[in-house]
Length: 445
Image (cartoon, rainbow, N blue to C red; front, side):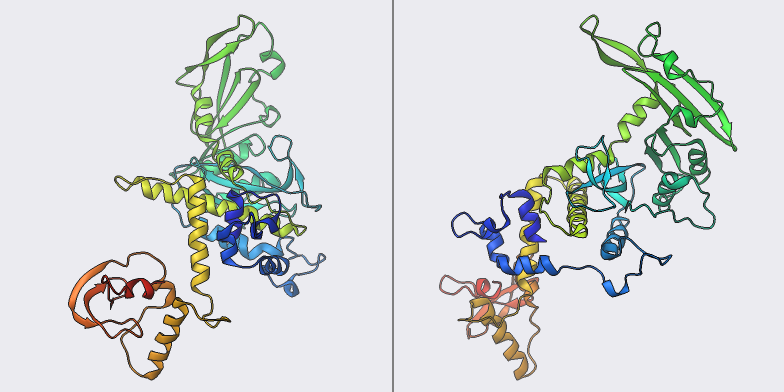
């Protein structure tokens, strides 16, 4: 994963160039060889193919190859507390792979790829997602059927706290039965809506609103009670006519927004209902996540469709971790926050160190200082009882090894017979640190 994250920031036209002797990228070369990297990519699997049920089976899963990754990430993403306002929208995993699940979305920057339904916070954090395969219509016994699209909202909203949260979505999902059902569940919602889904509603139609005699900024509002829930529909004329449906907000208070008047070539102010401002302020969470992913996307090509999805989900995971990191940093006084580029580089460096800390010590050739220390420690343990020595992944993590004073003790560096009065907090061992000997450095390398 460290290599993939490095490659998302440092762009080369060819994968093998990262290992080039002349223009290669040294941090990647230090992790593993190019042949090993390509071998891992070639044989990378996430599930047991022998357990994949045939297409004729009613429990057949089209995402079986990557189902463990999807389930694990949804479980981990849900651990972060949800903000009050959430948005649901479509997301595209761009790919050129020929596959029957690939979709075409003309309004997205990447028009071809695998489609995801994602529920995000206003800041862009993805709390839950599902990948479209054409067979998702799972419902719990007490859940009504709103059709394949409406059921997506119901599934994504299952873990949303009741009587606290608000959900925003566009006219692909919005319907009166869905909005009222969510309100009964304690989740209030707002979304754009297609006029043909507002049966018996007295709002003026699009043709009437677009007449030249109707000034820009004109709006109409209708309120009613449906199945015991108060709902509000508002239609508003801007460059085009747009209609909104909500269970918690209406047109009042009406504000003003600036628009450019092409006829007079000047900026004018027009009326803007509150429901429009509310929607525009909180609907863009998924688009924000898309923009974050698009800055440093893992663009590695693969003929295997599930690898392309894996790369996209890895990008989503990195963005989520960066957003959590920013929230934690904001609460700390006088702390600087890494931008996305530097965060990805730092994350890749840490993952590379974790990978190296678990490598075996018995490599060919003359052993390094780190391996020599590890072998001496293991030999000392075999000789009999000895002071506890932390494992290599803790010794070499470069975090929190602060020095402190202690009584005069024997240095615990294998091969050193000196005495010292310096003990290091995290490891809990005494080590020499003088002008002539630096056992601290050798022990922690």
